[in-house]
Image (cartoon, rainbow, N blue to C red; front, side, top):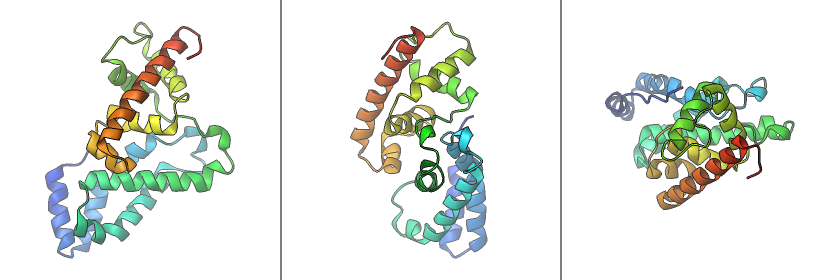
Length: 209
C-alpha cells in the first residue's frame, strides 16, 4: 500500500479556482485527494473495529471538515495542502475512535492495523539502515513480527514511524500533523526506531525487550 500523493501542480490549480469562488473546483480538489486519504486512514484503522468505524466514514468526515475550513486554510496557508488535509483526517480519526471504539473496545487500543504487505514494506524501510534481527524470515513472518513489535510501542511512537518511515514525510511536515516542533519529531523518530528494533530483536529470539 503506497501513499501516492496527488499532483501538486493540479492541487495548486484547483486551490486557485477555489479561492476564486469555484465550488465545483472544491469538489474536484477533495475527490483528487480522496484515495490518498483513504490509504492513510486504512493504515491506522484496526481491522477488528471496522464494523464500528470504516475508513470511508473517516474520510467523509475529514473532507466535510476540510470543506468547512477551506476558507480559513486559503487565508492563512499554514502548511502544504496535502499535509493540512492529512492532519485533518488524523484528528478526525482520533475523535471518531474515541467516540466509537475506546468506550466499548479498550482491548484493541494498542492494536496496529497495518495490512500485511504494508508491514513488510515498513519493516524493510525502517530496518534497512541497520542489521535487521529477522533478515532470514519470510515476508509473512516479518510482517507478523513487525505487528507484534508495534503493539509494544506507544501511540506516539507508532504514529511518528508511520509518518516518517512509511509515508516519507519530512520532520517539518510530520510536526505540523502531530503539533510538535521538527526537532522533537526527529528525536521521537530516532527513539521510536530504536525501540522498535529492540522489540523486534526480542521477538525474533523469543525474549523480552
